[in-house]
Every structure is written in structure tokens, then in C-alpha cells.
Length: 525
Ligand code: HEM
Image (cartoon, rainbow, N blue to C red; front, top):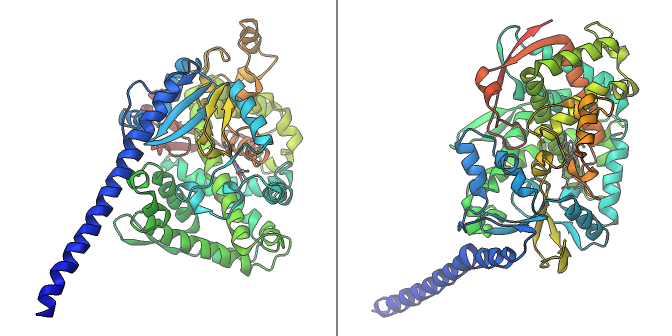
């Protein structure tokens, strides 16, 4: 009797609360998906120096461009290349990351002002608890540019010797040798996998002592999307979870209900978090097990000024930021050398002239100075990073107050990034930007002189592969040295061929997030 009278009241009041909750959620959704992005676009359409999409596309916003590219067998950032003429007309792109407003910096003038605003702390890093920064929540990457963060950046470059990196040359050569030995002659190999292995091995040995090899090579459980568990190496886990965290950016749940993503309440966030925990704990164990006090990992892990989690995330951050980026750029570089045989021929001639030949003492020829003096090798690497940059946009920044860039008002709390592709194809700055022409970086070449005469000279902010400002890439010297060494080693030790289909695809690209996983056939020389 009591139950009969009590239950209906309970149920109706519960239903009432559910109804109120659903209504509130609906209002929130309409505001987030329709009203806020629409008003944002309407505001910026008034400015002649701001680019906005022609038609408002609720929910997907500017992701449509990337989706269209991928559906048409192009790399996801190909539209920035194809529409570079249009991008060149504007200072700023008022873009929509799905439904989320994001200001993308386009012109060199806008970058100059961006850097000034960084100096006065009016623009700083943005940390969001999904996407790639969520993988390393305590690392310096997602932190504001305070004294402690800048000191952590400095420690990173000092301890890793990133500025010179020459002491790592013998080790890098060993890694090249090991990877070429693992490749079967005249058979297809997955070159992305090979380069990922190579760049991971380079870092593992630098970061950790030589007494933890066994722990490094152990396999660990990884939960796949279908729930099946697979035993994988740490390198493969890093690559897979990196990809998953990048994909979080494009997941619809991330936009509709970010709290589910941020608190890892549902899949894929829940699953990704479990995989990440396995990876983090394994790296922690390796770093703690090494008794090699000379290792870089030891220096990080005994740094008194950071918490345990900060130390660990800075280590993982280096692996994340410094391995796949370089691996993807290496795959691009070999691709262009294969597609443009004249460039490969010229590179091989220069290397031969400089004494880089396939001999057992290749190592004795390698010095930073010698690499610096190889003009064509340097130009090939620079042109690769221009033509197919590994990171199409920087990490996220945020305006810390109401600011103006190129007279365009940007409200406090707005997400900001620098576009790193469109300026690489700006016809006002580059002659024949679609083509791979290393000579454009050689001041003595005919091509450079011709470009100069035509007034096509790129300014410092036209090259954006490593970004600009106080949070640009601290590993660029290391990455450039590693790229030059690996390319010199590969082209003097093997012939290589990408598939005809890949070579004829003008819109292929291998930067981070690319769907292309090329196979190549190699012939050992
Ligand atoms: C070709 C290879 C590489 C490319 C194209 C590249 C590019 C970039 C870009 C575009 C950024 C974002 C900067 C910004 O948000 O404004 C970045 C940040 C970063 N990179 Fe690299 N990078 C490469 C290799 C490396 C290497 C080898 C390391 C080694 C340590 C490294 C460590 C980092 C770190 C720690 C950050 C975050 C910096 C900060 O937040 O202050 N990168 N990189």
C-alpha cells in the first residue's frame, strides 16, 4: 500500500528531473553547435582580412575540407596547398574545429604580432584534456610559458644536447645500419614502420641507460578498438595511442559532450586512457630501473624542481614530439627523391664529392660541420619540410585577454594556432611552389637567382615547419641533423622505389595524421 502511493510520486519527480536535464542539454547543444559558431562566423565576415567558410556547416565546420581531401585520396591538409592563393589574401582564418571557434594565423604580419603578444603573455599555451596534449598532461607542452616551463625547455635542450647533437652521430649510424639490415633485399617494406622504428631506437638509447635493454624490448598488452588485446612493443603502443589521441580531435563526442572525453567516461577515451596507463607505467619502470647515471633519462628523473609526473611526461613528450615527426619527414624526403630522380642524382654526386660513400668507415666521415657544408643535402631537407611539412598546424594557444591581431579583435579565451602549410605554397613568395626544387634554398643556384629577380623571396615567417615564437620546436637542430644523416646513409646504401600509384599522386603527403602508409621496394647497393 505504502509502495503503491510512494512509487508513482518518485517516478514522476525523477522523470521531471530527467526532462529538465534533457531540455538543458538540448539548449546547451543548440548553443554550442549552432548559435555560438554562427555568431562567431557572422562577426568575422565583416573583416576583409579574415577568411571564413562560405557556407556555415554546423558540427563539422572546417573539418569538411580535410574530410573531402581524404575521401578524394589526398592527404588531409592538401586543401591548404590547393587553396593557398585564397589563403594568401588574408591575415587570419576564423576557422571552426567542428563547432569550436579557432583562430588560425596565416600571414607573416599576423605571426609577428602573435609573437609580440606572446612576449606580453597575452597569448600562451592552451591545455585541453583531450587530443595529443591529454597524452602528456603534466609535460611542459601544455603548460603556460612561466619561468618553470621555460627552464624545463632549457633543461631539455641542454641535457639532450639538442643544439649540437653531434655526440649522437655514431649511435644514429648504428640505428641506420640496424634498420637496413632488417630490410629484405628486393622485397616490399613498410617504410613508415621502418622510419618509426629507427627514430624510436635513436631516442630510446639516448634517453635510457644501457642496462635496461630487456625492459625496453618487453611486450605489453594493448586493447584494440574491437576490444581484443594484443601484445605490442612500446614503440608500437606509442604510435597507436598517438594516432588514437589525434583522432580524439575529430570525434563527434568530443564536441557534443566534451566532459565525457575529458573525464574518459566512454570509449574510445576510456580505452585510450587504459592503454596510455600501461605505456606510462612501463616508461616509469624503465626510467627508474636504470642505474646508468650518465643517461639523459636519469637527469630528467632526478630533477628536483619537477614533480614525478612532470618528469615522466617530459620524457614521454620527447618521444612523442621527436620520433614520429622526424620519421614522417624522412618518408617524405625519400618519396620526393624517388619522384624527382634529378634531385637524387645531384644529391648522390654531392655526397660522393664530400666523401660519403658506402664504406665501413661511413662513420668517420660524419661530422656536424661536414653535414653543414653539404649545400644540396641541406636544401633537400629544407625543401622536404616546406613541400610536405610534418605538422600542418601548431599546438593550441589561447588569448589570455581581449587582443587584436592585424586590427582584428579576438576575445579572451579564444583558441589560436599557426597554419604551417598554406604559406609554404604562397606564390608571392615561392616560384613554382608545387614542385620539389631544393635549389630554391641554394643562394648560388640559378633557380634562386631567378626567383629573386622575380621578387619571389620568402621571409623568415614563410617557413613554418618548426613554428615561431617562444614555444617553437626545441628539437629542430636535432631533427635536422638526424634527417641529414639518415638520408645520406640511405641514398648511399640503397636504391628505393615507391609504388607507381603513390608516385603519381600529386596530393599525397606523409605528415602527422596522414592516412598514407607507403610500401617501398629496396635494392641494397
Ligand atoms: C622534423 C621533425 C620535427 C618537426 C617538423 C617538429 C615540429 C614541431 C612543431 C610545429 C611544434 C609546435 C610548436 C608550436 O606549438 O608553436 C613542435 C613542438 C615541440 N617539439 Fe618538435 N618537431 C620535430 C622534431 C622534434 C624533436 C626531434 C624533438 C626532440 C626533443 C621535438 C620536441 C618538441 C617539443 C618538446 C615541443 C613542444 C615545445 C613547447 O611546447 O614549448 N621536436 N615541434
